[in-house]
Length: 372
Image (cartoon, rainbow, N blue to C red; front, top):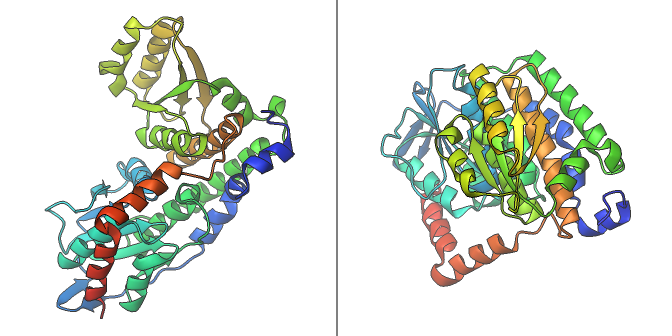
């Protein structure tokens, strides 16, 4: 497959995943310019939700592409605020969650059964709930009960909506007085991602396109992503899974120096892997040294591709790496001759869950009983 053949690429990407990724700067602007009003309190049947309570912890509930933004929030804010943040990818919420928890429920479709299940429990615990979705049962419930929510644009794959999920999270924290995103940070983010899309857009030939070049290097290989920030490595790993339809793995440094690195001892050059190393300006000096030593140890066993991340501030760097990773994964899907939009295995699983046990329908009925 020729990455310079625009007609072939458009044929393999009929829903326009590349067009959606191109719109990231506009998505970010829209999210940052959208206001959300937090009420003082809301009564849902016998449950009183008091939004004036002091926030002692933050819980983000979501699955797949809808949950990833929570991981980024933890990484970015862990040294900036003194309120713990947790991400929950399951049907239930932890026991410590109570009325002093800000619970943000994210479901791009608005119908994710695990997130709906967490919503029901969060209401029963009187937590301060806020929603982010494009529609579905989640927004229907929030709207009927006058609960605060962000409505984001629909019509795309959840994983493609990353900036539409991350920046509303930051806006919610700003609205409740927990964290304010500096305008200079926003300006640099916008400048960098606009530069990336001009370098990586469809009509830029492979010879001048860093995303196409990296995709060609990863072709017919199994990427092992090394990153000092697991949130980014995991996001790119998932994009390779869903967009490119390949297996991929993610390792966080320095943790992988205590396990993963040993696994290379039995490998020779005849292996299916390629190391995709993400290098950040903000990585700890000792992490930089660990990268150097680790690459020296295995350079004769596996190809290593380094991607230098840009940005003067951590959030900027995280988004830079993520945006590049999205472009790479889509171009890799084209090389693999597959549509980056479809996720047949996920669709099949959802269908079978409903068919065999009405898992989603039962949760919807439970939620309907809580409506005012």
